[in-house]
Length: 373
Image (cartoon, rainbow, N blue to C red; front, side, top):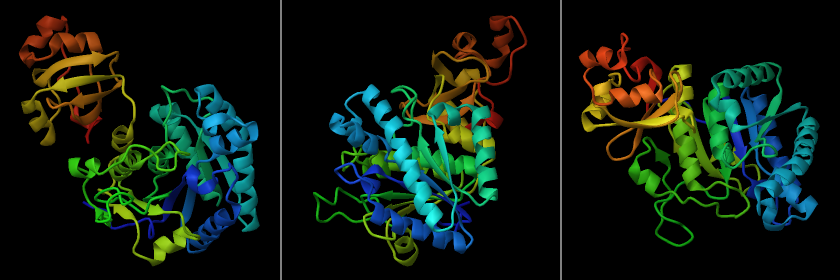
């Protein structure tokens, strides 16, 4: 079932603002523009809508203050130093502007692990819910001062989608330097057309994505925005990509036909939404075509349909289920550790007790602990 809510009508939304919108090429906050965004937030809240902000810009701001080359992205150490310095200025700016409109800001810095670990994810969700209940505007950013190259979101598009899941938001707005998804690069192809609505993210839609950030200041591109849409939609939230190059971008979104909206699928159970949105896993289980067909019909993954495993996972860890073409078709919780899983790949259920030496579990990944992508 497709959700009828949009980011314009949702009771609770997440608004992500990219670095290229918030910080000018000289590394200075575009304060006049940001004031119009805060005006829009105040208007939304007066209308009864709760707003969570995911704000980029710490690295860009810190790089200017520290005179670091390449916008603070020349090395991981530079990025961490720039983020630590710039985050203070960024949070101060948000606090001042929101306070001027009678709103209280709360800063939350998260890492990938905070939302990939189930217990920490639930803690973050509880904090967000309490802040919303108190009428506070959370301002969230990735904690780039401690994140590493291996363990980080890498862009705030996907962070915004994961925050929407944790906060049970029904809509996500990605303010960008592009006005939605186009059939081709509009800067190169005058015949490129904006796609106003995407109801299903398939290979054709993914093929339209451009991986790099057009501004060179941020870390996201259209590919990350489409991945963010997949994560948000999996939790039942609609996501819209819209230009933030105009003043009052949220008011413009409400009043005009602009951007590209990815419609939500209808909310999944909370744990399955968390599984669907995960960006990391402990390993992979490769399956044959017959197993892929069975999973699509709602079956559990049985050992007979598994071809091989890789990674380092234990029972209860999150694994990816990969079809014969190399596509990740599901996320789930492993019922066996990797050594035992490797021993029973391709084996019929009646043989498992003899192979393992104990009464086996029925599935490698049970359907109750698995979500199709």
